[in-house]
Length: 186
Image (cartoon, rainbow, N blue to C red):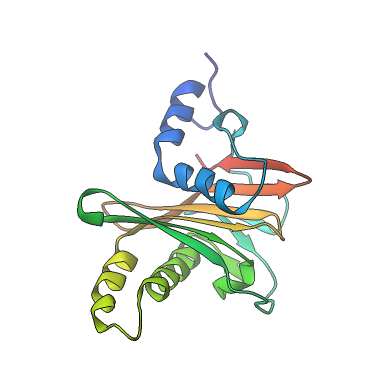
């Protein structure tokens, strides 16, 4: 039984915990929906607080991306997932350009804010006033976000702490030449 650097638990326990998380399930679903091939598997996940070369960084809330501002060429695709009793937990998978987030720094906080706006905009129908309440509730109940930009070859997975609501980006995805590398922030 091997140990994973940065964790006091055996490798198998870390992988079991990872695959049980909603953010991991959303990541796998995002690859199935929007990216062909290269679906991540837990055994290929690297555990590291050192993300590698720029434009990626690791802060107190996990991984982040720092990119130059760019024009948004297309709207991102997205899929919203509702789970739990009476739909109390919402997750969203977003596939599109990093520029759509509207920030040079794409980290847990900026991505969560963007995902909430996108969730609301997706569910709210301006012709139906009754859709405002459910759209607001879905945006507020957001618990997991996966963002994938295949053009830039990056992605992030964000979880919101159930008790405090603090967003953390524990998953960094790098996609290049048909290979996918997922890093887990310890």
